[in-house]
Image 1: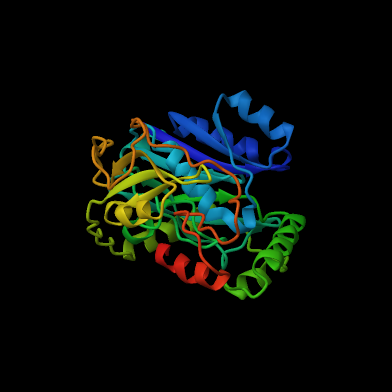
Image 2: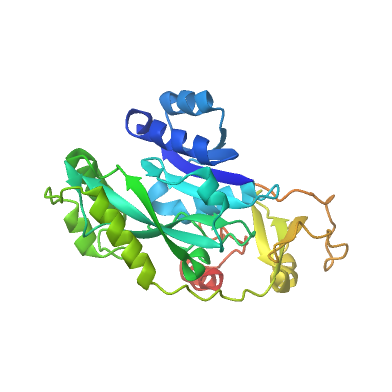
Length: 331
């Protein structure tokens, strides 16, 4: 099964969302669209394609990694094969047959940034848009530029001469709107080189010659050596519900410490060894178990009740400094 996913927000129906949905419909057997503060136009368009939706209205500029990991928990309910991830202004130039014939675990494609009446060669780049589902779902923990795929994909990805058409920077108005967003959420350019932010203000572009672009891509792919696959030790994660109603996945070796804090109930578990959910744990340290849930849970969306509570494991710190020190354990 090929699963596609995309995150969209208000206003995208008037831009390039339809093109993205058409692309996903051609490539995928199932599609899930995350709706982040969308309007009625986006809802109507997604329903038109019959795609599943998942609502997550946390602030995009501060919670991208959390929103995407929440989506992965939701997708973990059943087995699947390939994953195709797109932004709501992107179109992937590949066929379903070509997808099914790919060998490996993750793939870089060439993100071609359309810019004005042409494209921006300097600010076009390789990025992961296809990967193989294996239940390892941790994203880079940054509020911006955390990627559309889990962290492990970027370590093992193969390069393929496939173009991803990105329309989101084509119009000057869109580029300036993005500049404004970055000035709000990353004013010190902590998460991206300032040169990229500055480039968004530049209206110059390169003329498009697809023949020469494809020739260059094939040549560049030829010089890249395949990356060695990182051996990831299988790990079992236990799903617990904290006192705020959030469901968190805790590595097996940290379960005893987490439960000792109190306020947690058992939900289920999953392994990262490419197998299906393992059998529910029958004994946990001095805790009354809720009936096991067979399917991997969806992480509920909503703010924590205390500013000193850890959003991930529920630990309550004595001060904001203590919470900051504790949070480093999850990075």
